[in-house]
Structures are given as structure tokens and as C-alpha cells.
Image (cartoon, rainbow over all chains, first blue to last red):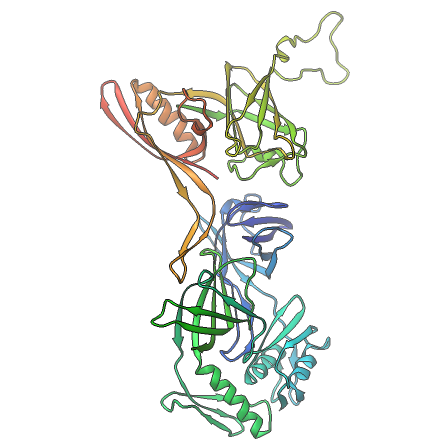
Length: 322
Length: 254
């Protein structure tokens, strides 16, 4: 159940799609809600930011605040049963986009961080230590959970070339080393894309027919240090990356990991919405007996789309079929 | 068929109410938006205009005791009083009560009728939900009864199911159960044009797509015939000098 708190002219309104009597009455004033999505910046990692689209409300929600205000603070939660057990998906600002006879539509905007890392800053140390440095109160001011990062942590050595937004730089560094991260409740969770975080095994009662898609092959990756890694698909595309270490062997190792992910089997898996929502980086495995032959599969989730209208979560990721 | 229209309830209060689910929710057109009491038994006091029936929907009450007071509490404002020997006549303000047992507790619909009162009146409902339950109700409607001939035989009674059903990978089905409402399709016959016009123009048209309290077959007391729904489709034809046929669809609301 989707639970939305929207503050209209300083009055908090609790609304939902169905009309639910929990601890409070959540009025059925949501007409539609475009599926929120969290996904990594690259297939091989980076910052997994929550991306929200829009929400349409019944016009009579604004009976006492007409015309509807341009902006409203908004919090979006999900629960399968109780109000106290609701899981916060998003907190930010709703910005008015359209009014018509049937609905009032707002686009959703999250908070952004414009902390900068200055040109000339030298970053040297393990990836975990570098991420910890970024999380410091002087910069992103976040706690760090590195439980599921790689051990040993790859070595970073890089000098910032120009003033740059901290989150964007951190995203690029993590993606180079095939790590992703997401931020929740003030904590940055760092995850190794090669091994994932947590694991769930699905039975065939737990998912809808998946689609298995190989992306376009990548023939080679070339770093700005001149190192080159070649795949077994010479007809594929070429990719260029910025290397965040100056040791050639480490650059090649990192790029081989990227090739493994970019040329891996991809899958779009759809599972029913439930109390136990999957998380970014989670390893999800299943056996598909509906294909030509019995197939074992797993992916590391790099993108989650919460489709409340259709009561499902769409999971995209790369992994292995066998 | 009987329809309560217009809803003549001016005000409704409860002896106890959860602050999140006040008595005013009983006047909202959404039965799911309930009033919830504090204990198993509460009293609703309803200030009403001209009335002859009351419909109560989506309640867990096992019994309803109804008392109707003609007129309302009458008193002078402060500092004013009658001269000696004169006082308000409140003879009709304390009639006997009638207790109804609601069958079909899970459905929670009740329909109570009395001889039409043309003046304003106060309706008192004492609702009891039974041991271990907190009393609640969704919608209350009271007012004048509009009576028509019963629907013709051939009335259909089905469901609209809002559940989500999707096929899983192994061919089994994932079902996310949501609300299921009842839907009726039937035919009314009007022998007199004036009755037909009253139905279409004085009752249906002003209410538009808002719901009505309907006793679908007034001759049958079962709860199954008491519906809070809207007429989603109405079409009529003049089939003879003394016959106008109305095809209708009645859809229960949430």
C-alpha cells in the first residue's frame, strides 16, 4: 500500500490509492503514480539515486487550497500491513506541473547535494577509505556502511582535475571499481557489484515471466592512462573510462571486472510487491523451468522500479545463466 | 424498490469517536472512510429533516436500537423564561424505542423505516458491536423514502472485482486481493409518466453519479437487498401509453 503525506498550505494530508483505515485514514485521492525507480549510474556501478516521476491527485484534495500551491513537501512510504511498519521511499518536494478537470499533477524532486571537491585534491588510499573521506562531516556528512564492499578494497590514486560535485566524482570512482552505493536515512551503503549484498532465492511462485537480454557487446575498454582491456567480442563497441588508480595492473584488473559485467547476461525480473522489498546490489537467484531447458540464473540488482499500479517490482541486473 | 433521497441528515454526533475517525465520516460518500467508536457500544444522535427511513452501511453493529424524537431539544436562551404555568410541549419527544438485529454482520447493512415525519426530528441510534469489538460504521443516510414498483424478474446480481491477477512464471497466479463490489442490472416499469419523471428528473438527475441508499427489493428484508451504490447507467423507453421501461445498472461504492 502506498502511503503519501503531502503538506498543502501547512496542512498535512494523508492520501493513498485505495483509501485505507490504518492508525489514520489515508484518503483515496491518488489517481496515478508513475513508478519510482532507483538505479545505478552505470551498469557496472556508481551512485544509485532514487528517481521519481510524478503523482496525480484528485482535484478535490485541494478544495480548501485552490488553486493548488506550486510546491508542497511530500513523503512517500510503502507498507504491506501497518502504518508503523511503513518503509520510506522518498522525501522531497512536489512541484505543480498541470491542472485539468480530472486531476492535479505534481512532479517529484528529491534533495540534492552540491558539495564540491576542489581541483588539485589528491585521493589516495583504499576505496573504502576514500569513500569514508567523502562521507566525512566536512563533505557529504553521511555514515558509511561498507559491509558489502570488496575485501581487499582496491587502491585508489587520483588527483582531481577540476572543481567537481562530490557525489558525481564518488559515483565515477565507485563505478570504475565496479562498486555501487545508495544513500538511505543518512547512511551511504557501499556494495561490490561482483558479489552483491544479501541474497534471496526465488521459487517459481515468486516471480512473473522474466526477460533475458544481452546488451550490445563491448569489444574493449581503454583508460585515459593508455591501458587497454580486450574482450572476446572484437565486433563489439569500444568504451573509454577514466582510471582512478595509477598502477597499470590495478587499472587492467578494474577494467576486466567492468568487461565481465558489461558482457554478462542481463535480465529483467518482475516480482510481486511485498513486505520484503529487494534492495540495490542484492543477489537474486532462481530456477526457470519455463525456458527450453531448466535454467539456473542469478543477477545483482542494479535497478529497481516500484510499479504500484501493477503491484510489482521490476528488477534489472546482470549475472549468470547456467 | 425504495430510495432514500434526499439525504436529510443535517448533523450527526457520536457518544464516542476515535479522533482519527470522527462521526462526520458517516456523512462522507465513501463507506470505507468509517466512523470508529471508542467502545463496543456507542450512540449516534442524528439531526434530520423530514424522514421516513434510515440506511446504515458498512457497520459491524450486531444490533441497532432506534429512537425518534419529533422536534429537537427546545429551550429558551439564557435569561428568558415562560411566565408561570406555561411550558414547552415535549410529549412527542420521547417515543418508544425499537431494536433491530442486523443479520449479515460481515456486510453490515441495515434499513429501518417508520411512518413519514414531515417535521424535523432527532434520530438516536444505539449501536452494539458485540463482545471484543469496537463499533464502527461507514455511511448513514436518512430521509424521505421514494418508492417504486420492484424490479422485474431477470435482475442480475454480480461482482466487480478490483483485485490484481497476474500469471506467474510457472503458470500459477499471483493475486493481490482488493475490494469486490456488487453490481446489479435490472428493469423498472413505470405505469404513470409522472412517476417516471419524478424518478429520472427529481431523484436521479440531481444526484448525478453520487451514491444512493437503495432497498433494491422493498418487499424483502434481507440485508442482501440493501445497497449503497450509484446508478452508473440508466436508459428508458416509452413502450406503451401506460408503460415506460427503465434499464438500470446499480454499482456498489467503496
